[in-house]
Amino acid sequence: MKMDILELLNKLNLIYYRYDKQKNSLLLDEIPNEHSYKELIKITFMLSKHNITFHVNNDKSISLSASSSFISSTIRKYFNTLVENFKNRNSNIYILGNKKVKWAKNLSLFDIEVIPQNIDFSDYDAIIFTSKNGVYSLNKFNSKWKNIPAYVIAPQTAKVVKELKGRLAFVGKSHHGDEFAYELINQLKNKRVLYLKAEKIVSNFTKILNDNEVKCDEKVVYKTVYKNFKEKIELPKDSTIIFSSPSTIECFFKNIIWQKSFKVISIGKTTAKYFPSYVSYKIANTTSLESCVRKAIEIK
Image (cartoon, rainbow, N blue to C red; front, side, top):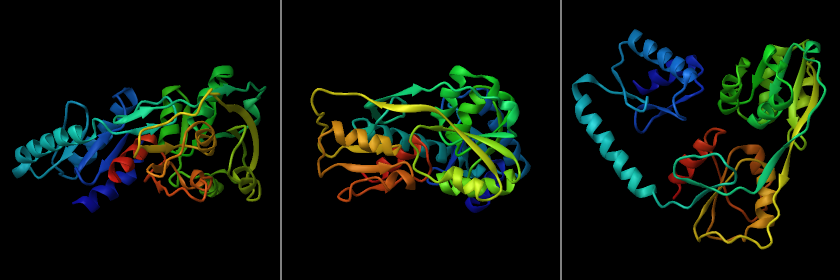
Protein backbone atom coordinates (compact mmCIF):
# COMPACT_ATOMS: atom_id res chain seq x y z
CA MET A 1 0.00 0.00 0.00
CA LYS A 2 2.84 2.39 0.83
CA MET A 3 4.10 2.49 -2.72
CA ASP A 4 0.60 3.12 -4.01
CA ILE A 5 0.16 5.90 -1.44
CA LEU A 6 3.35 7.62 -2.56
CA GLU A 7 2.30 7.48 -6.21
CA LEU A 8 -1.11 8.92 -5.39
CA LEU A 9 0.27 11.67 -3.15
CA ASN A 10 2.81 12.81 -5.74
CA LYS A 11 -0.07 13.59 -8.09
CA LEU A 12 -1.58 15.98 -5.52
CA ASN A 13 1.51 18.27 -5.42
CA LEU A 14 1.14 18.79 -1.68
CA ILE A 15 2.64 21.83 0.02
CA TYR A 16 1.47 21.61 3.63
CA TYR A 17 1.40 17.85 4.19
CA ARG A 18 4.25 15.33 3.97
CA TYR A 19 4.13 11.55 4.09
CA ASP A 20 6.00 9.92 6.98
CA LYS A 21 6.78 6.38 5.87
CA GLN A 22 7.74 5.16 9.34
CA LYS A 23 4.49 6.36 10.92
CA ASN A 24 2.44 5.63 7.79
CA SER A 25 0.84 9.02 8.27
CA LEU A 26 0.46 12.36 6.55
CA LEU A 27 1.84 15.05 8.83
CA LEU A 28 1.07 18.75 8.73
CA ASP A 29 4.23 20.86 8.85
CA GLU A 30 2.58 23.94 10.32
CA ILE A 31 -0.44 25.15 12.28
CA PRO A 32 -3.61 24.41 10.24
CA ASN A 33 -4.88 27.29 8.09
CA GLU A 34 -7.31 27.84 5.22
CA HIS A 35 -4.80 26.59 2.64
CA SER A 36 -3.83 23.45 4.54
CA TYR A 37 -7.54 22.72 5.00
CA LYS A 38 -7.96 22.65 1.21
CA GLU A 39 -5.14 20.11 1.01
CA LEU A 40 -6.81 18.08 3.75
CA ILE A 41 -9.97 17.91 1.62
CA LYS A 42 -7.96 16.86 -1.46
CA ILE A 43 -6.16 14.13 0.47
CA THR A 44 -9.22 12.67 2.18
CA PHE A 45 -11.16 12.71 -1.09
CA MET A 46 -8.34 10.81 -2.81
CA LEU A 47 -8.07 8.29 0.04
CA SER A 48 -11.82 7.69 0.06
CA LYS A 49 -11.89 7.32 -3.72
CA HIS A 50 -9.25 4.58 -3.52
CA ASN A 51 -10.84 2.84 -0.51
CA ILE A 52 -7.88 3.54 1.77
CA THR A 53 -8.75 3.54 5.48
CA PHE A 54 -7.67 6.70 7.32
CA HIS A 55 -8.31 8.77 10.41
CA VAL A 56 -7.94 12.56 10.77
CA ASN A 57 -6.39 13.32 14.16
CA ASN A 58 -6.96 16.37 16.36
CA ASP A 59 -3.81 18.03 15.02
CA LYS A 60 -5.11 17.45 11.45
CA SER A 61 -2.50 14.81 10.69
CA ILE A 62 -3.89 11.80 8.82
CA SER A 63 -3.21 8.25 9.98
CA LEU A 64 -3.41 5.47 7.40
CA SER A 65 -4.29 2.01 8.66
CA ALA A 66 -6.06 -1.23 7.88
CA SER A 67 -9.45 -1.01 9.59
CA SER A 68 -9.06 -4.30 11.50
CA SER A 69 -6.02 -3.04 13.36
CA PHE A 70 -6.86 0.63 13.61
CA ILE A 71 -7.33 0.84 17.39
CA SER A 72 -4.08 -0.96 18.21
CA SER A 73 -2.32 1.13 15.58
CA THR A 74 -3.63 4.34 17.14
CA ILE A 75 -2.47 3.28 20.61
CA ARG A 76 0.95 2.36 19.24
CA LYS A 77 1.31 5.73 17.53
CA TYR A 78 0.30 7.53 20.72
CA PHE A 79 2.92 5.58 22.69
CA ASN A 80 5.57 6.28 20.05
CA THR A 81 4.77 9.99 20.25
CA LEU A 82 5.31 9.96 24.02
CA VAL A 83 8.65 8.21 23.57
CA GLU A 84 9.66 10.67 20.86
CA ASN A 85 8.77 13.62 23.08
CA PHE A 86 10.85 12.20 25.93
CA LYS A 87 13.88 11.44 23.76
CA ASN A 88 14.01 14.81 22.02
CA ARG A 89 12.91 17.23 24.73
CA ASN A 90 16.48 18.28 25.60
CA SER A 91 18.03 18.10 22.13
CA ASN A 92 20.65 20.73 21.33
CA ILE A 93 19.57 21.29 17.73
CA TYR A 94 20.14 24.84 16.52
CA ILE A 95 18.47 26.70 13.67
CA LEU A 96 20.45 29.81 12.68
CA GLY A 97 17.38 32.00 12.35
CA ASN A 98 14.06 32.88 13.95
CA LYS A 99 11.71 30.23 12.56
CA LYS A 100 10.27 28.00 15.27
CA VAL A 101 10.46 24.26 14.60
CA LYS A 102 9.66 21.56 17.16
CA TRP A 103 12.73 20.17 18.96
CA ALA A 104 15.01 22.96 17.68
CA LYS A 105 16.44 26.03 19.40
CA ASN A 106 16.88 29.36 17.64
CA LEU A 107 20.16 31.22 17.30
CA SER A 108 19.68 34.43 15.32
CA LEU A 109 22.93 35.50 13.66
CA PHE A 110 21.65 37.87 10.98
CA ASP A 111 18.80 40.09 9.84
CA ILE A 112 17.11 40.50 6.46
CA GLU A 113 17.32 44.00 4.98
CA VAL A 114 14.79 44.88 2.27
CA ILE A 115 16.11 46.60 -0.88
CA PRO A 116 13.21 48.47 -2.56
CA GLN A 117 13.14 48.50 -6.37
CA ASN A 118 11.01 50.17 -9.03
CA ILE A 119 9.35 47.31 -10.89
CA ASP A 120 6.77 47.41 -13.67
CA PHE A 121 5.18 43.98 -13.47
CA SER A 122 3.23 44.57 -16.67
CA ASP A 123 6.52 43.88 -18.50
CA TYR A 124 6.57 40.26 -17.34
CA ASP A 125 4.68 37.03 -17.94
CA ALA A 126 5.82 35.46 -14.67
CA ILE A 127 7.89 36.02 -11.56
CA ILE A 128 10.29 33.59 -9.89
CA PHE A 129 11.26 33.12 -6.25
CA THR A 130 13.94 30.82 -4.84
CA SER A 131 13.48 31.96 -1.24
CA LYS A 132 10.61 32.89 1.04
CA ASN A 133 12.67 35.93 2.07
CA GLY A 134 12.35 37.14 -1.51
CA VAL A 135 8.56 36.98 -1.29
CA TYR A 136 8.35 38.68 2.09
CA SER A 137 10.80 41.41 1.07
CA LEU A 138 9.09 42.20 -2.23
CA ASN A 139 5.71 42.35 -0.54
CA LYS A 140 6.94 45.07 1.83
CA PHE A 141 7.35 47.62 -0.96
CA ASN A 142 5.21 46.39 -3.87
CA SER A 143 2.03 44.30 -3.71
CA LYS A 144 1.36 44.25 -7.46
CA TRP A 145 3.38 41.06 -7.79
CA LYS A 146 0.26 39.20 -6.63
CA ASN A 147 -1.29 39.70 -10.08
CA ILE A 148 1.51 37.78 -11.85
CA PRO A 149 1.89 33.95 -11.90
CA ALA A 150 4.59 32.96 -9.39
CA TYR A 151 7.00 30.07 -9.96
CA VAL A 152 8.72 28.96 -6.75
CA ILE A 153 11.52 26.58 -5.86
CA ALA A 154 9.94 24.61 -3.01
CA PRO A 155 6.86 24.12 -0.80
CA GLN A 156 8.14 26.44 1.95
CA THR A 157 8.27 29.35 -0.51
CA ALA A 158 4.93 28.29 -1.99
CA LYS A 159 3.32 28.56 1.45
CA VAL A 160 4.38 32.21 1.70
CA VAL A 161 2.97 33.01 -1.76
CA LYS A 162 -0.33 31.43 -0.70
CA GLU A 163 -0.28 33.19 2.67
CA LEU A 164 0.13 36.58 0.96
CA LYS A 165 -2.61 35.84 -1.62
CA GLY A 166 -0.27 35.53 -4.60
CA ARG A 167 -0.90 33.53 -7.80
CA LEU A 168 1.00 30.30 -7.29
CA ALA A 169 1.64 28.72 -10.70
CA PHE A 170 4.34 26.11 -10.09
CA VAL A 171 6.32 24.50 -7.27
CA GLY A 172 9.70 22.98 -8.09
CA LYS A 173 10.44 19.32 -7.48
CA SER A 174 14.25 19.43 -7.28
CA HIS A 175 14.43 22.17 -4.59
CA HIS A 176 17.90 23.24 -5.75
CA GLY A 177 18.86 26.40 -7.67
CA ASP A 178 20.33 25.23 -10.99
CA GLU A 179 18.08 22.16 -11.16
CA PHE A 180 15.04 24.36 -10.57
CA ALA A 181 16.09 26.55 -13.52
CA TYR A 182 16.10 23.50 -15.80
CA GLU A 183 12.62 22.56 -14.54
CA LEU A 184 11.33 25.94 -15.72
CA ILE A 185 12.71 25.97 -19.25
CA ASN A 186 9.86 24.15 -21.00
CA GLN A 187 7.21 26.05 -19.06
CA LEU A 188 8.65 29.52 -19.61
CA LYS A 189 10.34 29.25 -23.01
CA ASN A 190 9.94 32.45 -25.08
CA LYS A 191 8.38 34.26 -22.11
CA ARG A 192 9.76 37.23 -20.24
CA VAL A 193 10.18 36.57 -16.54
CA LEU A 194 11.55 38.35 -13.49
CA TYR A 195 13.67 36.66 -10.85
CA LEU A 196 13.40 38.31 -7.40
CA LYS A 197 16.57 37.45 -5.52
CA ALA A 198 19.02 38.08 -2.72
CA GLU A 199 22.06 40.31 -3.11
CA LYS A 200 24.27 37.23 -3.05
CA ILE A 201 23.28 33.96 -4.72
CA VAL A 202 25.26 30.82 -5.41
CA SER A 203 23.59 29.38 -8.51
CA ASN A 204 23.73 30.11 -12.26
CA PHE A 205 19.96 30.45 -12.28
CA THR A 206 19.50 33.50 -14.54
CA LYS A 207 22.18 32.42 -17.03
CA ILE A 208 20.66 28.95 -17.43
CA LEU A 209 17.26 30.43 -18.29
CA ASN A 210 18.62 33.04 -20.70
CA ASP A 211 20.77 30.42 -22.43
CA ASN A 212 17.62 28.36 -23.02
CA GLU A 213 15.26 30.89 -24.64
CA VAL A 214 13.71 32.22 -21.44
CA LYS A 215 14.07 36.01 -21.23
CA CYS A 216 14.96 36.38 -17.58
CA ASP A 217 15.64 39.68 -15.81
CA GLU A 218 16.58 39.86 -12.14
CA LYS A 219 16.10 42.31 -9.29
CA VAL A 220 17.76 42.25 -5.88
CA VAL A 221 15.06 42.72 -3.23
CA TYR A 222 16.92 41.84 -0.03
CA LYS A 223 20.29 41.19 1.54
CA THR A 224 21.57 39.39 4.61
CA VAL A 225 23.10 41.61 7.30
CA TYR A 226 25.25 39.88 9.89
CA LYS A 227 24.94 40.66 13.58
CA ASN A 228 28.16 41.60 15.34
CA PHE A 229 28.92 39.93 18.66
CA LYS A 230 31.57 41.22 21.06
CA GLU A 231 32.77 37.70 21.80
CA LYS A 232 32.43 34.37 20.05
CA ILE A 233 29.54 32.19 21.25
CA GLU A 234 30.22 28.75 22.73
CA LEU A 235 27.52 26.13 22.16
CA PRO A 236 27.13 22.86 24.11
CA LYS A 237 29.24 19.87 23.13
CA ASP A 238 27.60 17.50 20.60
CA SER A 239 25.19 20.18 19.36
CA THR A 240 23.62 19.77 15.92
CA ILE A 241 23.75 22.88 13.73
CA ILE A 242 21.38 23.48 10.81
CA PHE A 243 22.64 25.62 7.93
CA SER A 244 20.01 27.01 5.55
CA SER A 245 22.19 29.10 3.20
CA PRO A 246 25.85 29.90 2.42
CA SER A 247 25.45 33.13 4.40
CA THR A 248 24.59 31.17 7.56
CA ILE A 249 27.85 29.24 7.14
CA GLU A 250 29.91 32.41 6.83
CA CYS A 251 28.19 34.08 9.77
CA PHE A 252 28.41 30.97 11.96
CA PHE A 253 32.16 30.58 11.65
CA LYS A 254 32.69 34.28 12.36
CA ASN A 255 30.68 34.19 15.57
CA ILE A 256 30.65 30.63 16.97
CA ILE A 257 33.49 28.56 18.45
CA TRP A 258 33.71 25.42 16.31
CA GLN A 259 33.89 22.04 18.07
CA LYS A 260 34.73 18.69 16.49
CA SER A 261 31.78 17.12 18.32
CA PHE A 262 29.25 19.22 16.37
CA LYS A 263 26.95 17.50 13.90
CA VAL A 264 26.01 19.49 10.81
CA ILE A 265 22.90 19.49 8.63
CA SER A 266 22.69 21.33 5.31
CA ILE A 267 19.32 22.33 3.87
CA GLY A 268 20.50 21.53 0.34
CA LYS A 269 23.32 20.66 -2.05
CA THR A 270 24.20 24.25 -2.96
CA THR A 271 24.65 25.32 0.66
CA ALA A 272 26.76 22.23 1.34
CA LYS A 273 29.38 23.35 -1.19
CA TYR A 274 30.37 26.22 1.11
CA PHE A 275 31.42 24.25 4.18
CA PRO A 276 35.11 24.27 5.12
CA SER A 277 36.85 21.05 4.09
CA TYR A 278 37.10 19.81 7.69
CA VAL A 279 33.31 19.84 8.22
CA SER A 280 31.35 16.61 7.74
CA TYR A 281 27.65 17.07 7.05
CA LYS A 282 24.35 15.45 6.14
CA ILE A 283 21.87 16.90 3.64
CA ALA A 284 18.17 17.14 4.55
CA ASN A 285 15.71 15.13 2.47
CA THR A 286 13.86 18.29 1.39
CA THR A 287 14.69 21.99 1.50
CA SER A 288 12.75 22.89 4.62
CA LEU A 289 13.86 23.55 8.18
CA GLU A 290 11.39 20.91 9.35
CA SER A 291 13.18 18.36 7.19
CA CYS A 292 16.53 19.54 8.58
CA VAL A 293 15.33 18.97 12.15
CA ARG A 294 14.05 15.50 11.24
CA LYS A 295 17.45 14.66 9.77
CA ALA A 296 19.15 15.99 12.92
CA ILE A 297 17.03 13.67 15.07
CA GLU A 298 17.82 10.73 12.77
CA ILE A 299 21.58 11.10 13.21
CA LYS A 300 21.63 11.73 16.96
